[in-house]
Image (cartoon, rainbow over all chains, first blue to last red; front, side):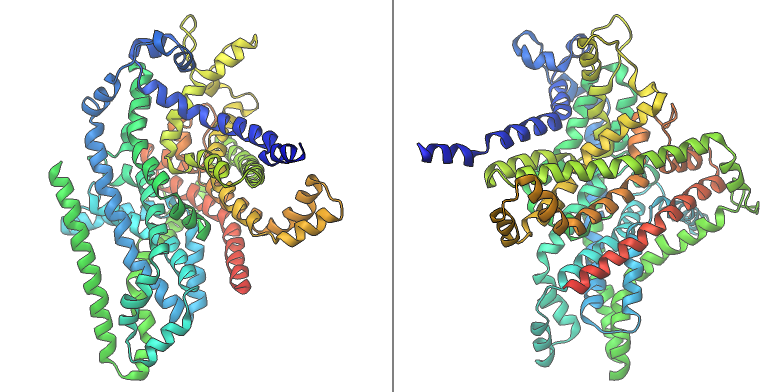
Length: 288
Length: 327
């Protein structure tokens, strides 16, 4: 009997129920979206999505909304555009940040503390604070040389890369500081150059931190609206398209839901598959 | 479309090759100098590309924005402090500042409190349940503000009278005997602002939970055990033993959320477009720059925002220093 009571106590029924309630409340909005995406225009307008859950057989279900947003609203094109923005914007800053973090961590130089303090300070600067001059500068470059970075993918990559650098340098340096200094000193004594040590020792050992940053940055860029709005408005990304859809909810909430669903899939897959790295990236220093 | 993908792939390859070549070249250049010079300039050479990008796209523009805030709408003529005077004498802007203040006063506190609650509860139920519960609370962190806005529209939506109720909040209110409301239009007590804040608390709690949870796991078991032996109950344990030991993390989460909230922009754009007295500094910048094409006013607004964030910047740097001295 005692054992049974102990078991029941260990199960923590009260705490579990409280958590189920909390998590339930937390999930309600998302469930509403997922359900609505699979409804027809008529049923989405004639009853609440919660009613559809409780009486699933009396409902019309359909994939029509997905077809509509993928073709009529070209969500498919936006999906590709978002990918083309996000992947380079994730890959490009990594090497730049890694070299900087390497210098900050392992090489003594004058003013190191001050420069690093500047990097930390830049992490919290709102990116809007730099936008006006950057856009004007790029327009001036266009007038002078004819090269247009506004309305182009490379413009968005450069912006995302630059804005990501402070956080990337910070995360990578924090990680590199935990690497065994003795190993690097031994390699120095054996005659390895700083350049070789970076590629052969520090980069391979920093893979977990690199992965954390990559996931963090990928999600950030995927979910960004502002930079994409300025730099690739001729090739709209998903957040941009989704905002438009939200404005046309008169065409039916199922379209909004389906569009949102499509833009959510990638972040959710990345999130659930790589949660471990994502969490580490956040704990390492998320102040973006 | 295939062209775009190919272009993207080629750019990645080209970008990697170019940056690899750049660093290789920089290293070569350093190696050409005498030994004692090498020592001094190697780090700077490795920092050069990052420093260049940061200067050109962040630091110099930041200063230029400050200068533009003293210029007219086209950014060509000096107007002194007129932009600031215009802003601070405009009742609408004062409302915006009040909104920003409310965001800052409410969201970080609730986010931290909710994170603490979930972290404490999940810590007691064993690894399997802990993992599932945490994933579900954390999930919103991975989605965009625009997606969050669409998701919450299914809660807040209001339909014309006579149509079936499809917004959950209105259904709950009518079921309780109340009347359906156009939630986003209610400016009394800035209720619509509060409803927007709920969305951000929903998004950010996962972040706060994850950080606080890992701090709780770092609390030494002996301290908890000792207090338990002395007869402390679980509420006393939390307030007197656990909380003091994770206070540093709690503050760090608080400040980080505070900074996020000060810059808030997308959610306002997506939910109300800044109408019905819901605008905030981040959104007003967007409005002035992209819709009104007023460079001076936009720069002044964002300068005010940056100046409000500077004290937080100081706290941030101090926290980093403290963490490092603990290492």
